[in-house]
Length: 142
Image 1 (cartoon, rainbow, N blue to C red):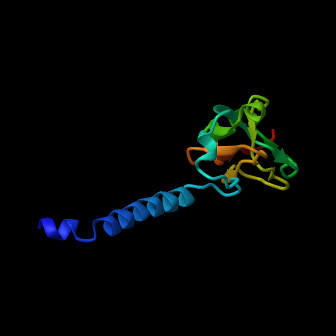
Image 2 (cartoon, helix red, strand yellow):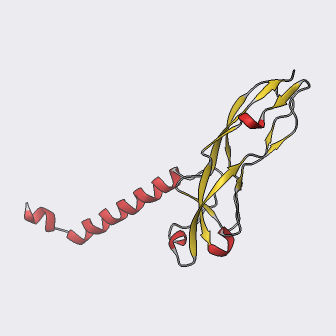
Image 3 (cartoon, rainbow, N blue to C red):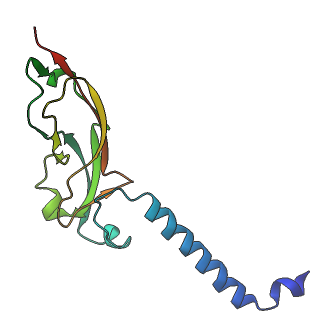
């Protein structure tokens, strides 16, 4: 048994290390959100970078169909906030994150959509963020 383990030990150790690195790379790629800026993993943990939680704001364009209204008071955004990581000088200036614009032109009923957040140059989403589930309530006006 001992000879099996020690035979070509360094080759086995290097193979194991490469397998672990590949696994982390694949998991990182699968958890990346659409539109998320691709930054090497070590950049986020460098000196001068900070992590900040920011609320998410939905960007709506257009108007619902005639005799229908958008009920902003009933709109839901899940999650309500997302974490970003980047240089302190950029992250500190951010007060919120925006979704890409959602066009509600001509809509006549409430609907839900999963939408990406707008990327911010020099900053990336932390912890698999980058998308939000939004329920857009549209009701018939009285």
